[in-house]
Length: 166
Image 1 (spheres, one colour):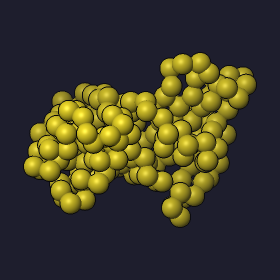
Image 2 (image 1 turned 30 degrees about the horizontal axis):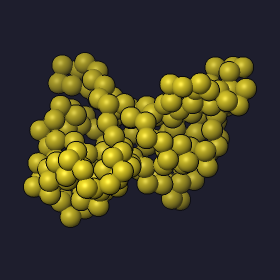
Image 3 (image 1 turned 60 degrees about the vertical axis):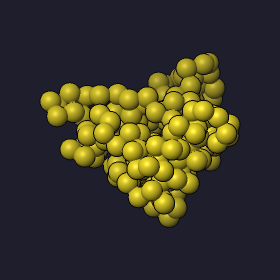
Image 4 (image 1 turned 180 degrees about the horizontal axis):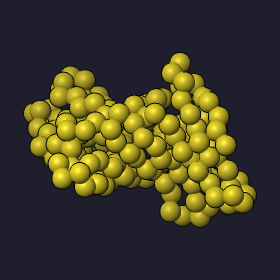
């Protein structure tokens, strides 16, 4: 079961990833709410130079039709994305009733500090509650020195499930 949605005027697909009888797909509003308001880790799937899959847990920020995360400029994630920018992502709640969003997308690496700082600030506030703590300060300093980058994901589709809709 598929439905087309529009996010920022770009047609996107929401696919039903629920097992029959266990729930149903999320609506566009539910996808946006889930991605915007959950503090869950995203798992980012990339392919390395040996063609092996790598899965990386990351903090993320969702802004309408893009998913962003911060990482070190020399990280395995960045190296993999530079070689192959097609990625897979999954953000799900392991507590019943189970629900989540996964999908495939294209990743772009931003090294532009002036663009990266406001996005990194949103990620830090989302996960640490403020910019005034050791973790946020450390990561923001890394962004401001150009040691970290922001990865921007443009999803091709969202495969969703919500077992609370049984």
